[in-house]
Amino acid sequence: WLGELAGGAARWIAIALLAAGMLLGIWSRRALGKSFTPFPMPVDGGVHVARGPYRFVRHPMYSAIILSAAGWALLWQSVAGALAAAALLVLFDFKARREERWLEETYPTYAAYRLSVRKFVPLIY
Image (cartoon, rainbow, N blue to C red):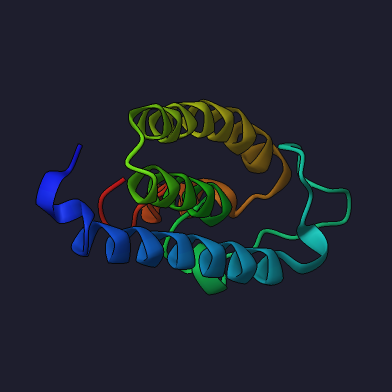
């Protein structure tokens, strides 16, 4: 569905999105350290992390997954994949809203952090 772009540029853009997603995911996980949990509730004894990729966006792991999904959709020229990436954006947006309520209840510094750092895309959203 991308015509001439499909042969060259689209492939490299897709690979760049996939690589960026993987690297961002690894960096995010490392930055969280012992505060990491796969669940939206903050972990007992955890700390509010605002270092590493968390300086730029509040939910870099979600951003990493969305980037990777967009990369796969572009690589495979898949409308269904593009719709899945868009659905992930919506899903993670809702999940992040609930998670942020718990983060604000748990960490006194989170409310100010939320006002100064974007959710998924630095300087944009």
